[in-house]
Amino acid sequence: MLRVIHPEQGALGMANVILKSALVLIGCLIAGDIAGVLFLVFVEVLPFELFSTPLTYVVWFVFGIFVGLSAYGVAGEWSSPKRDGGDWFALPQAKQTGWVIVATQTVVLVALGYAFHRLYWSQGVAGEYYVPDSAPHSITYAVAVLGAVIAARSMFTPTPTEI
Image 1 (cartoon, rainbow, N blue to C red):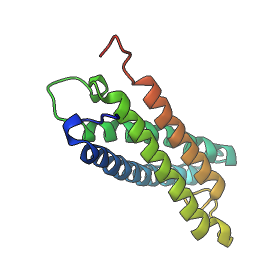
Image 2: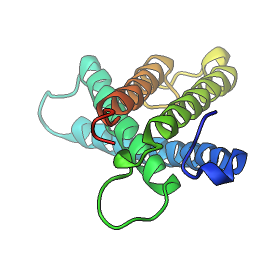
Image 3: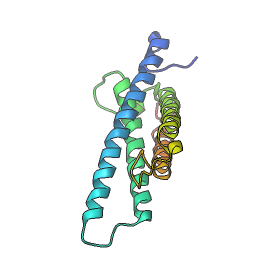
Image 4: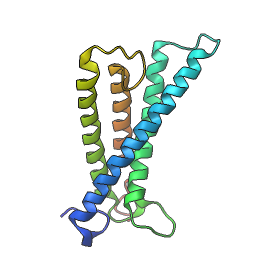
């Protein structure tokens, strides 16, 4: 049986983790998108010749990594019971909670990708280099977010000796 946060809560505990991890991911995606747009606008108006197409991909990739790591950590922290000191990664249910967060955030990213494909990308909207208007930049951003979430799950999972 999959134990998530509070074993006595059962499905309610899992629904709590699913809802909170989806909300955190959406909030982090929006914050990362705003920050990325502001950064690219700032770089574009600089008098130097720094702005280029590869730079836009690098910016969205790096912001995606930060968003993914933040979304994983905040979702787990928000879903975990309050305690004195220590991270939620040290809890006995951290491994199972991490899998639920990864699965939920993967589903949210795929659903958003499908929605943007139907709304923007298949309609011939020219989005330059901004997310979510530009399909290649949005896919770069989403892949970086998902990769960071999976990497965070691997990096921050306690080993059996640490539990």
